Image: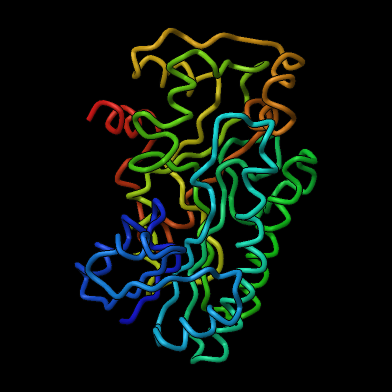
Length: 311
């Protein structure tokens, strides 16, 4: 099978390309720079900015893919200051909307390859109730203003991918940890935990879902020829912030996190940070397990983080 991986140098792409090659697929990978393309090994490498419609058309026409895997984001500069949430996600939101539209149009005009796109389930579900929500519950319709554009871009991405073909797939990933992520050893978020710069805010009842990047890549392999629609690709158990943060601090050998009231948390983390730490809800992976036969090698955040941070 010919597979075009858009964003082959991202944290998922770097895990995915070797798996595809080992399984006998022909891979064309893209990066946004010549230096990035040079880092893609084992397949054909091209430079592409999917915000450029003409360039996207040319790459899809040249690659002649059977499957297009879109992993394009612009989060390499994501930092620990949640007050800058809108700024961190601004370009990624464009990639999810304009970039996806360009890619889908190019696919339609060049053979109609199946599309597998990256979406998000880490903390996107409506607050309240169970920690692990099913895909049917949909994204929170009333997130904080700072997160509204991001939630809207995810809705548009999923709607456009589904409208293009019922065979297309959107994978709603959890928060990534593992190689190359901000939750890797030395990553900006873990350094904030180590330095006690990330406190438990309020009751700490925000419960995002996490996912090791290796498990994200394995999920793409599971849907190459199977499934359609939307799947939560997350580990088995969302992580209440009041439990996750002390646990990770302990694994790092750091002092326990401080506890601060919501009003103080809002001063340094903004509305987006307070939402994540006190109200967010992650997803359940039951559908992916049942329909795809996928299951995470790192089944829960406790064992996953312990292995990732002590290796």
